[in-house]
Length: 465
Image (tube, rainbow, N blue to C red):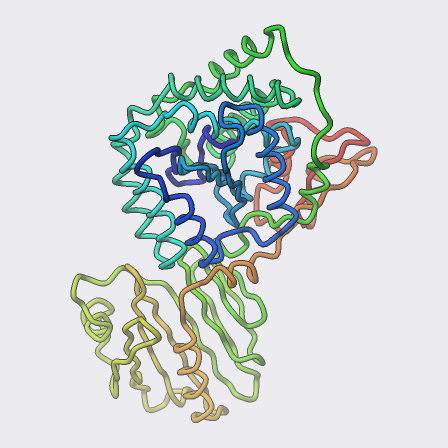
């Protein structure tokens, strides 16, 4: 999964190299990412991508120019350049590499887009729309920004295709050889892209993005064929040692995103897809399913609170209107409209039947982006109503948008590089891994063994811990 061979898990990619319009876009993008926490917090990795980038750059026509190579803290399998000396790669991309040569091939491809001036004037607006839209997700915690950017870019990207991609490939192959890397690594990188695409389609059941709006790009097999012709030409420079041990660098890198479907860490619930954080009292038991998070007070307090994401509110609807007209609740009294941070909300008391075992019920709705979040709670006959009121309000008002720091806290999965022992299989190595499903297949694809390969004794393989 490589830069320039752009694929994002369920998203449109950001394309590269803008020229005059992008004269200062790279530094602006970098500063925005730095301020929002979007840059991967690992000095060794930042130094490493710079070392590899400078090694490739030194054999290009842009030798001596000021380039900046940056690794982003993002799960997208992606890389892009703004065309003014900034090349961005994601940690999501790194997980699918096994050698420094593959990393170098991606960087060479991105530099190739800049050298080849592949984005014409009519393309520049599209590039900036994509970059700014993607930054909008990080800066505003709103996926609607990326949705808008993707919609606007779909038509604009249709004519960016074969000639430019193959030329960037050719540039990369030439520069890899001159820099002492194996040009064939680009072929293996493209094969990894193809394997990942097959995994997404056949195992995960997600549609292929590569054959969507990027239909005009060369097919994987064509690019592999073209690379085989390029790299069989005479005049290749002797291969030099890598800058670092790539697999050793991968050991300990954050992998994926635990919070993509909701995760609880120390009484706090994180949901990165919805960019939501909610905190429960420290002594409560908190759990979550795909549709709900639930906090249960200690037995003596006899109380619980749940939160669910609901259908989108109608235009100009207030949270109070939503309760009455969308949820059709006519049992809510003593209601109050409030603000939870920057988000409008409504809190009300629910009527309790006379013979109920429940002392009190509360309900709240918070609007964030295009969604409504419904909180419900109740306290039983053995509980303390005052403590319940305080806990419910505290939980509701803890609701906030997820930050980059929250993502780092929530995402605890790491890549670990181990030596395969006799008898090891990917099914065996996946046992106990923090992956809800498709663990065996995931290990196979990140290790370049999709769809049926197995590790051999002595192989260094990536596992997830």
